[in-house]
Length: 85
Image (cartoon, rainbow, N blue to C red):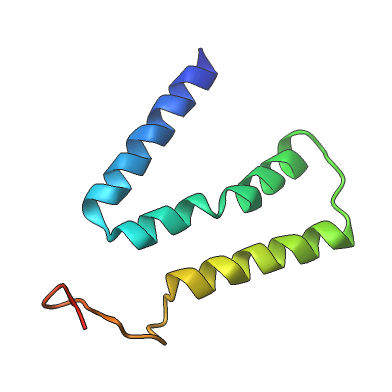
């Protein structure tokens, strides 16, 4: 029952994210799933984390940052007019 409850709100959150933010940003949230699942496995299941796992998680996070571009390095999207330039 708890699994269905969490799954329901996960899907609801994904659709809500797409509704209220740009699609590329909402889809990048999905790419952080390996980070969260590794963190939860470490905390809840007491799984061991090796240096290679930490390195892979670092590259995962770096890839999400490159795709999402939170600092506006590549300014192809004008937020005020919502038109691609």
